[in-house]
Image (cartoon, rainbow, N blue to C red; front, side):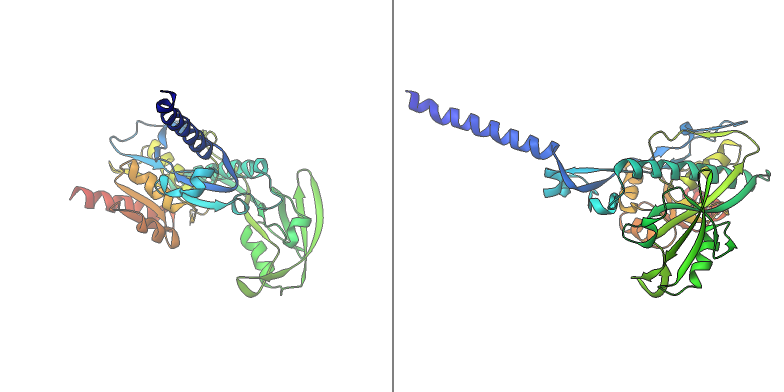
Length: 340
């Protein structure tokens, strides 16, 4: 009767092999593709320690949202729809050629640190505290591979002069570059650690904007910030600048200002030293993460970020803002509408 048992054995072996294949597909990374996934919004308050903090207003709170970025498995690459809100991204967009995972991660963590300092400065200034800020130049935050800067500049370099003119901010560097045509040479003075270097770069034409000269960098404000009271923000391994606005609002809340008015509000957006709200990435995933946390509203940067958030809101109120002060106003309005 061995022939009767053979199909059973074959079925068992087939199921086992199928399980092995499925396991391999689900675990083994695809190598050249990343996946971006939603992460549930979380309260900011446990991450922030403010000298002289007061008891937060209950039951509301400020929430920050992040995204999960990792290499996609073979199965996720074949069927990305197994995760809600998943987006597949080519590895080149996550780690451009010549930029290692380690360097990208370090740059992302540095962005978070700078964002936290700017957030604390904006919050304290809004309460009337004197915050000492010395703007020291344009910080090289990202270098585009294959562009002129890739050969001579490094991450964390600070441009302090261009064409003999002092540069104290990204805007001043951009002003110098606007005076150039593609193919012109721009002379930079760069602070790299304790060394000062002179760097000359031949500009190229912006492929998105004909006639505009560029050198292939993204820059941020380099500044020394002295706060009048101790503020510590422990964001762990979370990188990037997109929680800046959320941190600034929470600092205000912890110092006694009723910012959330009893609402649970998710917030995303970078913030600069002047209180301008800056656009961020991953709004599709962040909106889903805010929805999963069942918050009352989601504050986002105005413009394309707001449009993407609305497209994924599924009934979640989206509040677009352009500045820190506007964020305070829209939360007060949202609370009135929510309670009416």
